[in-house]
Image 1 (tube, rainbow, N blue to C red):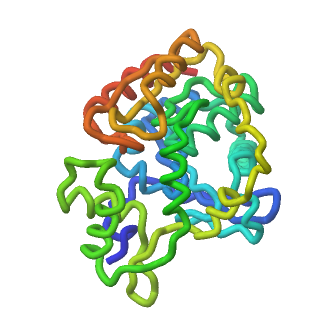
Image 2 (tube, one colour):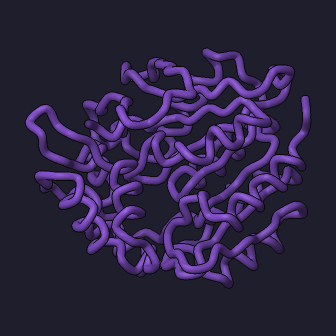
Image 3 (cartoon, rainbow, N blue to C red):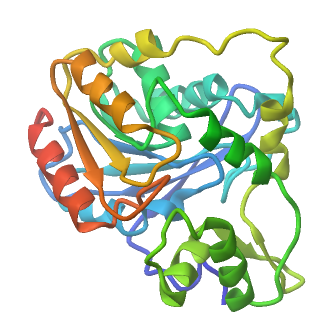
Length: 298
């Protein structure tokens, strides 16, 4: 049984086309009756993740709001791009804008993990006034070099496993420092979110390996872009910053600086996990519930 077949369907599939002809996929969770006028919540996964990352959180939030879980090109049910150099945050943001223009969604809140949080900030900067609130899950305008290098080292690596147990054990070995308290059942859960079963019966990561291509292009010694203006584009909307207490991507100092940088930003540290919290943790879930209560109702 594949990772997709053992999940109860409480969403509708939606497909749309990017400006360069890539067929993209999102899950739409309808929300409760009477919530149609409220801006929906857009969920954006991390670099090597997909819509299944939100299989716990999305239905929880859908008790209050319509939820749209987008899959970036090259992940999950979204098609792979012909040009690997389009696997960059600006293109992902343009794909999301195409989705919402098609759906006639004017305003929306975002919940973004890692890369998804960076795309959220880009949307705030390029689409002023459209974002009503944001959750930035273990990401910000200032990222730790050691963590970024760790991700570059493994992203796009090949290989497959014969069974889900084998895949879970391999994934646990790679990520033991991220979720040190996990047992095998936890590793199976997160592995089924991040991997898929091939027609040949092998377990592989559920993304195009070419998403790593832009990460390997030398920058010619140029300094990394200053993302603080992009972060500050979120303005005065409610912003929740989640930080894994063991994170090697978002430092405690950077999180505190983010709180100082916006008038309605709040930092919540999720104990016992690194990069990134799954947002199924009790503390993360309570913080997200409080954040939803701050969002505009219409």
